[in-house]
Image (cartoon, rainbow, N blue to C red; front, side):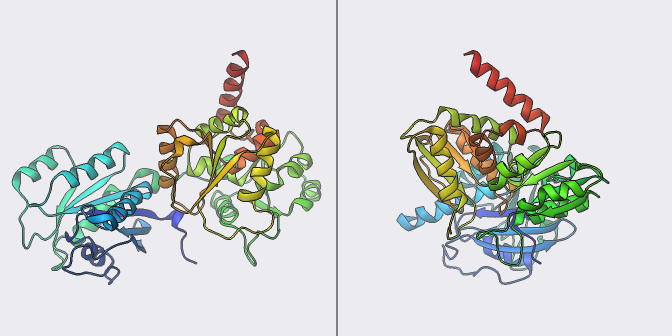
Length: 413
């Protein structure tokens, strides 16, 4: 089975038109992935190529349009190129020595500001030699750079090694999803409703990833539907260390799980795994400040046709409306599209982002923070709206303590 994008290191190739970005990609992958032409602007939309880059593992290369594109259409291409930075774990800035200038410096500063590691590539060294002053400057600043010629293959093996060397540590030493909360030799029960939204013949990605993570952590795992939880608990001669539920079944699962057994949801696990749990807990508390008529953005990583009681378009709006006691203005954003006017919203409610890499979720948190708009996720929103927030945070002592402290300070005001 193909490795999901969320588990791939996202490597973005950036630079002006005609510096050889597509040629570099083709050389790195040893395949004709991108169309190569002497005509500037051949690459229009981002081109993705998943592959195995050993010994690192699964990666996703993303070729982009030139950042110096022109015209109205060119501006849209540049927007798409810059949006790729939101999901880039490692940036490759491609230029040639004669053209290095403001475009490249702006990219480099953007990566520095976001703490994204970057590799500088001087391509076409068969035509242009890198200037010694630039080489000395990069060496002095300890910026990784290399000279290549995609057409001859010069420097390509060394570029692969440079990519491996500069891969971010948080990708190589990726934190666990749930196994650290359970421990070796201990058991977790995963509650998985099978309803109209459940994909036929399989489980959704967070459930599959959680099962695999528990197995990797030498933990036991029992998977049940919500109607079977009470019976499953009665059959165990030792209580599980944790119960994890689909957020939509929170109320029933909370009622059937003894209070001494920690309980949370897949979505809350992914708030920690893919984003920043503490910040999203703080974001959920903004639900108390919502008033009738306020604008709310519900963002979802996947693009799918909602059916029945869809969680993002039906259930969460209904629970929020009931909690607030008035009608809210709710907008939706799906896929990589994200509105520029986020400051217009009182709160952003995001899915668990299981289909993305962590970088893209952190980028959205950054944008929300810059606009001073609280951001939380589906599971935290549901738990807060249904009045079981503390119970859902029980497995995360630091987040629970922070919530209680914030709650206390708000009450005192």
